[in-house]
Length: 176
Image (cartoon, rainbow, N blue to C red; front, side):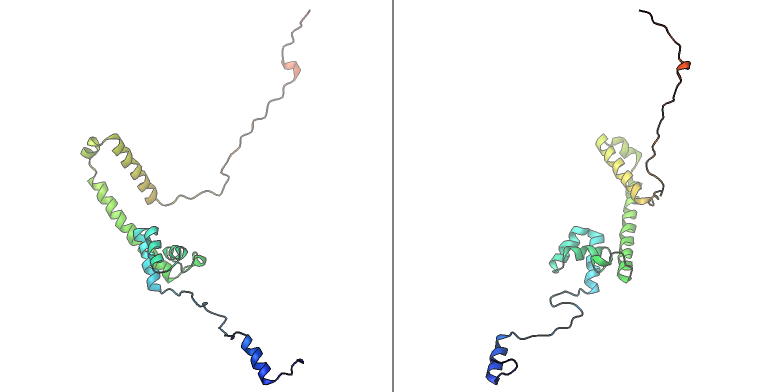
């Protein structure tokens, strides 16, 4: 068969050997990718803030989403690549965190109010240690973060020996 010269039958025979070519647009999501609605992202983000990451991952898995997607939604991002970008979704998650923090602060104040001298006197040593540990954690969480200085974190002190001359020492004659 010469190059470029085919009968119709030969052409159809060669074409039937080739699978059909389907052109898809090169932009946008690939087939099978999920475009998650903002309402689902918000539900998973709320769940992470209110019930914890484990419940958010479980919900995401139930909805057919990955663990990394649940983590991203918990941080107010739409993907792990956009963690540090602001936006409306990040603001929504920040407001949810503020609500959870406010609720926790109310419960903490109520618990502190119910702690009386009488209860402390009746408590065992392990109970008192547990309360002290919990309160120290609470104080650490409620205080604003301390700034770390930019200066050196380690300081070296080097002591150099003093040089002495021979004439400063007493001379002792030794005879054999």
